[in-house]
Length: 238
Image 1 (cartoon, one colour):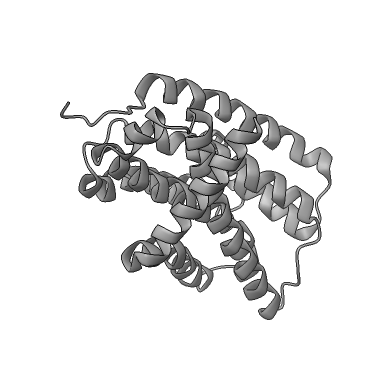
Image 2 (cartoon, rainbow, N blue to C red):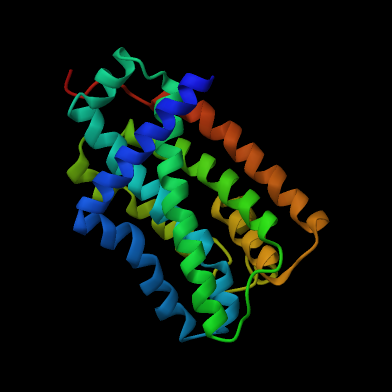
């Protein structure tokens, strides 16, 4: 267990270094969500939109980031070499999730400063936001791993993630309160994250967050099944 944790941390540091050297990825993964937030907040309640923005950020910081990473590494035989070396599958997935969580946490921290400077104040229930971040990262890291299995190459990954991004944009309560949206919006995996982050920011009670924690646990189970079914260690052409 300790060895897996050490390998996961090492792999996460490597992922973050590679991300920092890729200007295009940095813009797409780190900065683009803030541009969406700036655009959407012009047409509605700024604090409402911005406190729900972490539900969209997780798609960029974790899902899109890791779909590209898993796909590129699979095609370059990196995943196969890692699996054949000292790193266990748990360490490989854990390292990817840790790197995504680091990016995501950094985004949420910057967003909190933005909201505070805009007059919305600082978060009131940080532990709730941390639970949402950890569970949300775990869900979307596994979904990214599964999705990479049906993505032929890293170039196509840029296009393949668009449907998921559209669902996150239109299906989650980012700009419109959940009670004004169809019931199907509650089934979107970004909705629990959006609602918990918003409740955490305004200091909502834990009892209201319990159903969303349960929803994320269900999505975590679904994601595990999808990884077992779809994820590939070997290049698709082999």
